[in-house]
Image 1 (tube, rainbow, N blue to C red):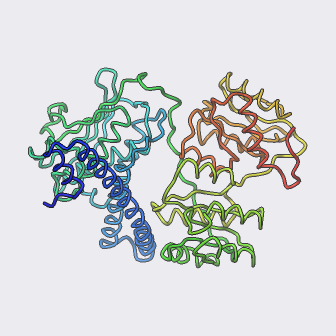
Image 2: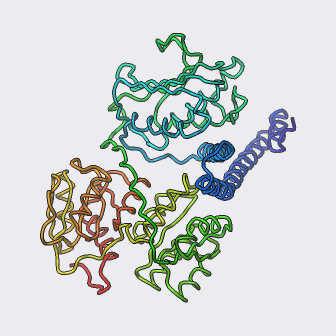
Image 3: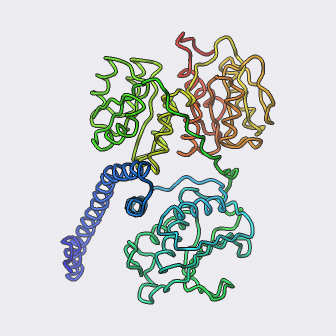
Length: 529
């Protein structure tokens, strides 16, 4: 095997005892390694675009002829490629993921559902056993990925009809998850390197899945290891058992547990009126997907960049703009701002393959309708969102209600409620604090609503729904113990005007509330206070 030049230089310098040359070669090796990782991540990101097109057209074709064998296999392979890209990207990233108190059982069950969607999983009988639910401090999405990777690893280790088992229990006070299979076992030659990238005992595996699992476990202060099959009482005993041992409760700070998401609403029927939708993306395949997806239900205009999109908008307004975030020239967010200047009622959905907390916050405060993540899991769900947006059924941000100074506050934390009351008072607004879920909305609607994401009587999404009912169209500001991208997207989709961290002091909280509510003012332009 050829040795890369920087590594060869380092070895030569070490053999010669030349310390300065060794330091220089080591620095060059580090730069080369970092650059290669970045290049690989960028290439893999670009692969997402054609994969998205192939996946979308496969799903659309299945609507016409049914999900037949070849189509099912094609979709499974595309999803496998997406998983490889996600695994590598996650492995190359050094950024810590946001964490909060979550239900381990909820995310294990979500991973089990995702596992079942893969046609290859149909030959496997999956058992999930749990003595109780376990709230742990972590990131729900990553816990699902950890579990799904272990399940996929187990499935790929067995042939023909087989059995895979997940057990959730405790060791002392520590939650533990076992994933077992009755396959061929792990070869002795790879056991000591099993969690290293590209090491695999399976002919089907990439060798990235377990390395990603190891990193996710470490982020959760958990220990992932291969253990003796005798830890489980099954007969016959499994051949392979992985154990994930989580920290005991109380060793990591926790907040309220994440509740299970409610089912997605049924998509409304297509509108009979011919509406206009503008799709902005520099990838031809993406624009083509949207045109074929919605062309029978609305007029679909195309633009390869923001400048072309603005030219369309100056000629004639549209009912919906769907734009990629990363465009050549002006970004999708800048396009949304300029579209609002041309038409304050512009309705915009943002798409991105590079999601971040910052851009989710920007999309929220711009009042965008949604923030779609590429690659899309199911193009039919995207179509349902587009239909809702075109029909005007998605909540939109409203202006601060004139003539009212009352702000309804949904918060059961006495400290936080006092800070909010003082902050609103500084703006000349009066807080009406609700520590329990109110019954019916007041006859006189409030000027605005501030709702705690951690409001115990109606947590998370339910708290947002309660705030919308209470506000009767008034702007909503969300207060949270920890701001995450998932929380931002929930708030955006509920039509909120902004999100703020709970730990802000009254003066800073007042300033931030003023900034967000000023953005939500009616066209009359009246200020606060």
